[in-house]
Amino acid sequence: MSSAFPATCFHKLTSRTGRAGLSVRSLCVITLASFLVAACSGDAFAGGNRPRVIEVSNGDDSFSGKLIAKTSDSVCLMDEFGSLKHLPLSSLKSFRVVAAEYNGASTTAFRQKLQKEVPAGYDVATSAHYVVAGTKGRADAYAELFEEIYRQVDTFYSVRGFDTTRPEVPLIAIVFGTQDEFQKYCEKDGMLWTKDLRGYYSLNTNRVALYDDASLLKRPRTASVEEAIVAADRVAGNRSALSRALASVSGQTADTIIHETTHQVGFNIGIHRRIGQTPTWVLEGLATVLEPPGLRTRGKAGSKSGNSTINAERMNWFNSEYEGRRQPGDLAKLIATDDMFKNQTLDAYSLSWAFTWFMTETPARARKFVDYLQTLSERDPLQNYTPEQRLKDFQTAFGDIAKLEVEFIRSLDRVDAK
Image 1: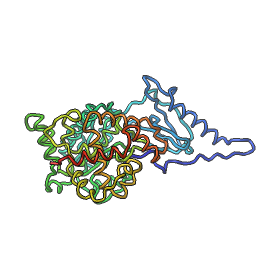
Image 2 (image 1 turned 180 degrees about the vertical axis):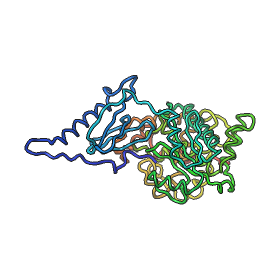
Image 3 (image 1 turned 120 degrees about the vertical axis):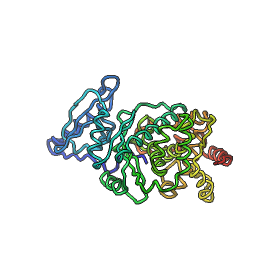
Image 4 (image 1 turned 30 degrees about the horizontal axis):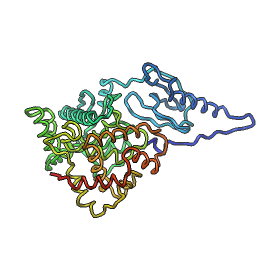
């Protein structure tokens, strides 16, 4: 799910005034705020519009990185490893520019950092875009799988007219060998762990974390993983490296990697912003649309493919469990707020998948979807995204939502999920 600055990071500025006017402390805060305003504008950029690196201190600790955004209460910095740090402005006592341009850490630095974090006996492998940790002897296969999913997701967006960019930093993924190790990592990372949690992508750390317990290999493979293996071999003309990588992990693990990597890639190639209030239906709709291999391995919207483009699991829920509850106006509810994900979680996922699939299946609709995502990316990420504004932006892009819902439902009625 997406989030703006976490609410816990917002603190009101409190200034004490006396007969002499503003206190020294208040003046320091104002000066710092003025500098950070400049840091968000053109005069803080150098070398082809690349942001400077600043260092701020609260007196006890120092934090450095490029300024992502600020409010009157807080700032967000991204460090050289791609992690976001949200800091209350009132706690900061000093600042300075430490570099004229922001550059992420090297792949070698990422690898060394990750090797120190993971348990003993873990390997760390690298690929063109990824640094991946896994149990001994398995990291290379995981890295190849993450890299291939990256390539497929990037291609999906590019051929549909999305303006993609290269990630600013290498992408990290950790595949733990046991559920216990994964649980400990979740607790340290501030992630609410449950027994059913298989993995997640963190907006703050920019990492994917999951586990691939050996017991999972004993369970039957999912159809989507089998299709992906066949598709990879068909493209390669023989048993491909991707096929071997998929065969070495459980079906559940492969599904988790595909889903969470789709989130991670989208947030790193310019499709989504890591701060802001991107509607959940957009994030989960795109992630579930890209779960079946047919869409990731074929060309432009509407082109022929030998592989299924339908997410059978979501389609089956849409046509069976959700159908009896579905009401006219549900699409507007999904667009206006994220409440449906809280109250009707699986219904929300299936509806998000179905509508996103509908919008990306033809070139004409895909172009409208690209324009809509551009509108989302250009929003002020720190402004509250009200239900009224969400509906307005949606209808500006796609037209009357009630008419579109009728067309969308009729189109889904004609789809056969094989």
